[in-house]
Amino acid sequence: MSFETKIAELAEQTGHWTKTETLALLSIPPDSSHGDWSLPCFTLAKKLRKAPKAIAEELAAQFPAPQGFEKTEALNGYWNFYADKKTIIESTLNGIKEKGLEFGFAKPKNKTVVVDYSSPNIGKELAFHHLRSTMIGNSLAKIHKANGYKVERVNHLGDWGTQFGKLITMYLREGLPTDEQTLSNLTIQELNKLYASFSKISESEPELENKAREAFAQLEKRDEFYRKLWAAFKEATLKELVRIYKIMGVDFDHYTGESFFETQIPAVIEELEKKNLLVSSQERDVVLLGEDIPPCLIRKSDGSTLYATRDLAAALYRKKEFDFEKCLYVVDNGQSLHFKQVFAVLGKMGYEWSENCEHIPFGLILHKNEEGKWEKGKTRTGTASLLREVIEAASAKILDVINEKNPELANKEDVATKIGVGAIVFNDLKNRRLMDVKFDWDAALSFEGATGPYVQNAHVRLCSILRKSGKNALELQFKNEELLDQSSYELIKMLSRKGEKIETACENNEPYILAQYSLELAETAHRFIHNNRVIGSEEENSRLFLVHSAQQVLESVLDLLGVAAIREM
Ligand code: ARG
Image 1 (cartoon, rainbow, N blue to C red):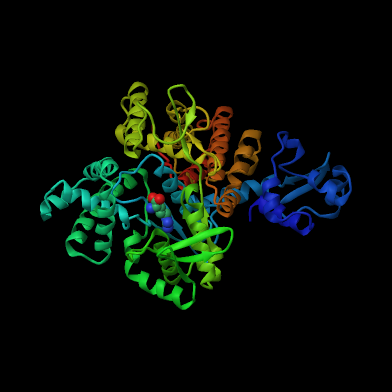
Image 2 (cartoon, rainbow, N blue to C red):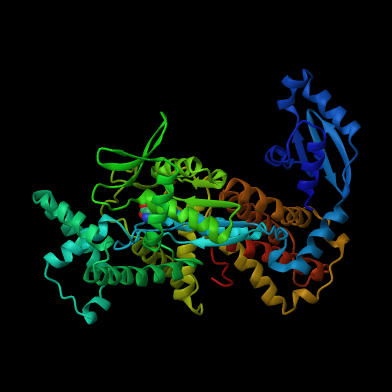
């Protein structure tokens, strides 16, 4: 159990704080003579009608220090905790020796979490804003796994719906060949073009929209020829998607898109009818959801189904298939109403587990316009708007830096891509997810400041010391007394917090907690390296083992964020 957790449990026993509250309040005093952790008592003053100073003093007198702590003390309204240094050093470093990258991970909980993320619409290239769902979801999946859950990673592709009517209509209208050969060589760029021409032409020819709707209705009625076209469109998109996911290091267990649920829809509608939930309104079938939430559309007048209908089927399927404890939908804020409706319908169907379905929204990506102001939406000249282009541009910029500073580096294209992607991903995850992300090339790609390259660089430095030592870290013995200087001890304390950080990030569905932790870790590691000679010092073995431990924690935390922990740059 981590030191913070022990404090949190003690704090809970006092009856004044919950564990979660304590973890959020705990701070590390800037002056370590004031303890290793500090719990402020100011917020209790009103409730207890007492001065914070008196409250802290009473708590310190009444509750003995938990195991592994030397003492607790009250100081000016803070309840300060002093860890037993030997315990902290040994439990942390031996823990890392034993568990390696999995140090700080929770024991298996025997519970499953479904994470639905990325889930783009087929037929279109990934736009830059798709990055957010993809990377937040990817990280949340890893964080839940580290926190002991079994995780099912789902890509709920938008591979069904009127947009396919549009593509089919346009494809046929342009008279494009429909032989197997041509269809199997279709590219996503061609599909993008079809979309663009559809939007353009339908402005002057509104009839086209009807045609598209008819085409989709036909598709739902299993028209074989239309199916063949649809399958080819999907295949072309998937090829490109998987290529990009690979570059980004993103993976899924299931590509169960909307079309997967097609055959399960009739049963859902039947169930809604049986439970007397389906009403017709303006020729459509809806479920009424009371005063506060607009009705949820289930079926259109031509019999075709909707996005929400497919999400209902998907939720029922996931519950049956995975018996999830939680089902997370990592989707932008714009879809809050949709999820409110879907979860409410599930609730009305009598499924209490609808409470465990959770929409995980996030803010927008903002770009700088020509006047230097931040704005959302389409990017102007010069800035890329497709994810593919952003990745390519970032990697190219980093490759320039490598060519200038370390032209002999092996695999430099690969390293450049890992740093470029890492920079974009880190920029995306470093703040609370509901905040808008400001994307500025220079800031994101810098090796200084709160960036991916900065953290990756700290990892590279640790790796390089280990490499130069020529020793196998796992065979080294460390001595507690050689690690008591301030920068060694601070680094060890920082490492000891890994488990608690994973737990808080998981409970709040906030990868930024680990991103901030990785920054603190990088900073502390840099300071340790700056202050302590490692190779050739008297404490070489102890310090090398600490370097190894920091490397392991940093590698694992970067991985939980979806950023590659490179070894050379
Ligand atoms: N395809 C949707 C879109 O691009 C996102 C799907 C999210 N997941 C879900 N189960 N609805 O907007």
